[in-house]
Length: 147
Image 1 (cartoon, one colour):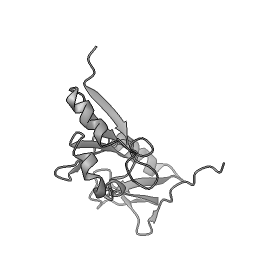
Image 2: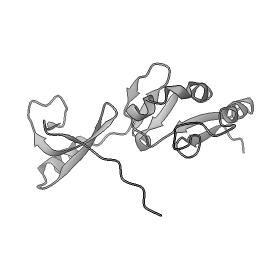
Image 3: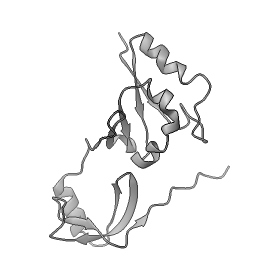
């Protein structure tokens, strides 16, 4: 069996909690490429958070141009900065959610997460007819469990 790809997590695998690469990490993807293995980056980070890592350009130069972010819901092209969303929620599901009483939605928009009460709006630019309200509030990151 030939290994052609290596999917690598970013936080805690390639970089530490200070967003600095661990020793030898930049050389690792170079070694994989020399063996004919294409290193792929996969991260739970949102696009905006990932873009704050421009100081890691040496590392990013060693991996594939396309990076999976937001648990695989966002595809970022490192070269162009273009975002695409390969995984989307079906319009019927979103409509059912907006019709259900007492449900709030969490959405990622431009790399930021927002939690908002659902606001039906027929003039929405989104094909689902659902838009975030003016009172949107950023979602706080969960605190790590205390040890």
